[in-house]
Structures are given as structure tokens and as C-alpha cells.
Image (cartoon, rainbow, N blue to C red; front, top):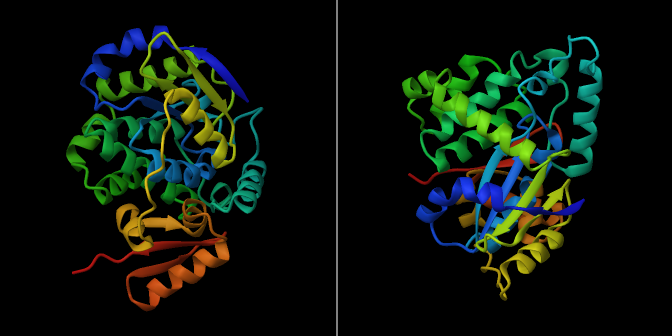
Length: 300
């Protein structure tokens, strides 16, 4: 669903931050739940947008929901979906989207504290925007692919270390007022924007009198490009696609589906090209429940 949203109130709160930001005409706010398989399935489209049009926009992630609803994934509470129902939804989403998410997690190692996992994202962001983005990606890889209980503090700490965060600072921030307030701001933003479906992308331009466009749900890549063109008010051109090896070196760990979407080739053709890089010992193949991921091997 596409809707217009008046952005004035939000921009009033953010004006100081925007004045210090790099000058790009557009901003995309991605409203997600880190445990949501549909949000995970949007990753290939977001990657292609960043590769081709990232020079026109800044991307920022917000956590959706309420403090109470963050625990709706714990299947033992009365009135909530059973572990089997959640697992079935994950499996269906994975088979349709091509982005693997293993529903067996909910039967073998269910999330003990979804709220702590979400707070950890805010704690990671306190060490820098890019570090926060890396942490979110690694968090979801451990959740959807490795069936890790991302509500467990030891698991969260290991993820933080893997993306180069200061582990002592991260642990302190997990219970800090700064992280809690950052999470509250995200939840307030979600409520003010009347988010009723996730994932939701909201696109704003740099003209504060203009309405933003809210895109609820998942759409084809062309839909998002058309919205960027409409919101920019000028002719925008995609950047040339990088060589596949350069793409892999930049993102380190990607799905066949992500390569397929970014390069607009079939998954079969993507697999062929990736296997050539395996033979050259530049990429490692990582089988998962649905499809395959590929890890770039850093040259020594």
C-alpha cells in the first residue's frame, strides 16, 4: 500500500541532525522488526537500491511496534501464535522469497527475549551508524540462518565482536538510558507514522513542505525506483553495477537471491558465476536450508 505522509512534524524534530548530514536529496526510513521474515526478504531490493541509487539517498532503520508487542514472538504466552505456527510462516516466506529463514528455530531454540535483541540494535548504533547496520545484518544472519537465540546476551556479545564493536561498551549500552531512549524514539516514530504493516519504507525529499511517500509491504524493485524518481523531482541515473567480485568484497556475505536481484539475472545464472569464484578460491559456498549464501574470502 502506498500512502502520502505529511513529514513536517518529524522534520521539525530532526532539523539539527539533517543540517549535519551529507547532502543527499532523499532519505529512506526503513521500519522493521528484526524478527520479521518479510523484512528479511526485502534485503535484496534494498541492496540493489543502495548499489544503483545510494548516491541519492541516506538509509536509516527504525524498529516498529510497541514495547509489549516486541515479545509477541515468545510462543508460550496465552493468545499468541504457537511455535509451530511461527515456524510454518517462516518456512513459507523463505520458500517464496528465496531468502532463507529456518523455522526450526522456534521448535529447537526459541527466542527468549525479543526485547533484548531489539535493544541490542540501538546499543550497537551508539558506536556509529555503519556499525549499527553491520550489527543488524549479522544479527539477522544468526537468527534466520544459524538458528541462534538472539535474546541471549552471550549470543549478542559474540555478534557485536564479529562486527568489530567494543564489547565492554556494547554490554554497558545494553542497559543504558541512551539505548533505551533510542528505542523509545523508534517506537514513537513508528506510532506517529501510523505503521500498520512491516516492512514499511518512507521516502522523504529535502523539501520540508512536501509529503513523504509511505510504502507498506514488499514490492518489485521498479516500484521503489519510480518513487525515488518522483520524490527527487529531477532525473536520476543509476550508478553502474560493480564487478561481482567487488560486490562480494563490499558486502562479505550474500545470498544467491541477493546477487540475482542486484544483477537482474536468474538464480541459476548467479550460482554459475559464483561457482566460478569458488574455483578461483575467492568465495566460499555456505549451504543453508533454502538456497545458498556465499562468503567472500579476504585476500592475504
